[in-house]
Image (cartoon, rainbow, N blue to C red):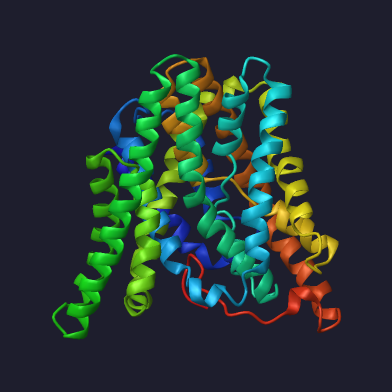
Length: 418
């Protein structure tokens, strides 16, 4: 009960100061991670949950399921066709190059890792976090096209990386001779196939039925909202029951739902985003208390250097390369590169690796992910508002025909519609 009291008091206290914090460099993930570090094993010892138990992992999984579904449902793919140039560059060029450069960096710094294990480290830290990037994508001082590009990237790349991490984890297990290549090949096929199938059935089928019933005034308002959460959970649980990947299913379900029932997306988005925001804040508190806190003493210079490089060179160089020929200014390209924060997805991916590998590599992946996310929480939080304001002022004074100023349709962000 002490843990529940700490969570409740922390959320209430932040709520009382949330308007002021919105105008400052202090973000919610920074505050809740700090609280977790203070009350957890590395601090006062008041937060006594165990990482080995199912509770903490279940919370992180539930949070990512809802975030994946909500982020995917925000993506109006038809509207994106008119403004997809920059997000496509970030996802199709920047993301693969980030994994490649991250792999090479891990191989140089950690000679105990194989190529596949180094690629697994890079894949775990490749997705960006919409919660940590919220201060940027919601900052009206920036042109819509910049905010939209980062919004779309963070909304899609965590779902894209789920199968990539699954494949690298399977290949690493084959190297460790945990199972044969054919067994892991079957496992990967099941993860992808059943994940896609469950996602399409839950998202498209559930969305179509909800749309029909709601149009006939047969669904009460609050249950329209609850039905959305039920679809996300059904996609995840259905895929897992079949032997598929539940996170792939949740992401695909969100895309399918947005396609067949766009009106319902608009009506229920605020509710599902509130739930996702609540779970995210709790997850960052638990991250600080029982995941990061006990691993603070595991920091080595190699882990610290990889974390710094992952947030800078490993991310920025591929993004700058991906923007060649885009017509954007050099500072804009570096801005895109810097604001690729690591957070919730990386935490969950590292937990999966840690639980599945049961060896020193799993421990190392967890330590690297923990420290990289910690660096990201504070570094990106402190720099978001000042740099967004500076860049926004510079672009506002520039010519109106700049690539950054091209008008594009604005999709809703994590915290509501524009």
